[in-house]
Image (cartoon, rainbow, N blue to C red; front, side, top):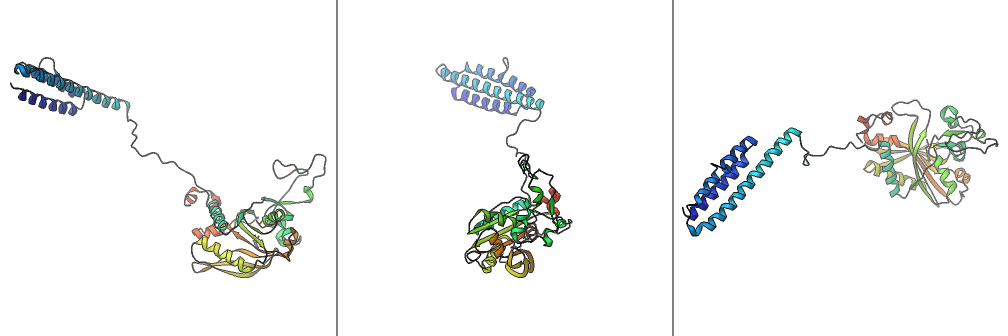
Amino acid sequence: MDLPQFLAELESLTAEAHAAFQAAADTAALEAARIEFLGAAKGRLKNAQKGLGAVAKDDKPAAGKRFNDVKTEIEGAFAAAQERVSSVGAAKREGPRFDPTLPGERLRLGRLHPITQTIEELKDIMGRLGFTPADGPEIEDEYHNFEALNIPAEHPARDPLDNFYLSVADGQSPVPGKSSSAPGQKPALTSRPLLLRSQTSTVQIRVMEKTQPPVRIISLGRVYRPDEADATHYPIFHQMEGLLIDRQVTMADLKSVLRMFATSYLGEDVHVRFRPSFFPFTEPSVEADMHWHDRWIEFGGAGMVDPNVLKAVGYDPEVYSGFAFGLGIERLCMRRHGITDIREFYRNDVRFLEQF
Ligand code: DAH
């Protein structure tokens, strides 16, 4: 046998051994392939080794080296196949293996309540118009909820049946953690009734008490009225109050701000119209409507801040003027999303909430 023939035989033996080991699906098949190629007595590698004797003497070193390489390679291929076959068996015994290529499990993330989302968006829009958010307490006194807003004691808006007055036991504060009077002192609260604020206009007063003009704020928050719940009423709802005080402010400024606001929120050019109205804290007072989708929609009250209100907080009405407005947040959100029942906001039904 000459060298090229011997080497060619080794080559095809190697290829066949690789193929046989790879094809073996289980330990029994692999053992059969092992005996065929690596068997000690009649294996094909053993057989090839015999051919080595027939190679010419000068070619022997090269033939022998190649034979050893092939032997190592075939043994390596067998070892790899053995590992593969046994790991398949192991996997079957252990059950499914971790598969890093599978898509992960979706996290069920919560989301913000539609009213909260609306509040954030309104703050954003008004922020671009230069209005800074301000907050006030939800438990108010009559001075900030009524008197400073030019709402006199005999005004029907102060009727106990139309407000959530808080009954306060002597010496106790309705605000947790706050004692209303020093020990041994007469409680002052009994002479100063408290209530859940019925409007966010209270924040106008609280801001003006603390700041000097110019003022340009909005206040968004909860208000409370003992209304029977129906599709358009709920005893808790939200308002956005706006207040701008400066020199030479006019109703044209008010209308522009409301129009820009409505246009930003509803996403198209919205017309705003004023209808004469009355609020004790504005003069003149208007109901503001906006024209959207071929309809006029009421969106809240507004007007020029009454000089009495400016005087109550120590502003000079001869120098300063301003406008204020108060809009229902639920109503805005309902219009924009086509929601027809305000109670949906408070039912906490995820099928409703997850649509926003
Ligand atoms: N506070 C009024 C309400 O709850 C709404 C309102 C009207 C607010 C006119 C204003 C305003 O600031 O100027 O019905």
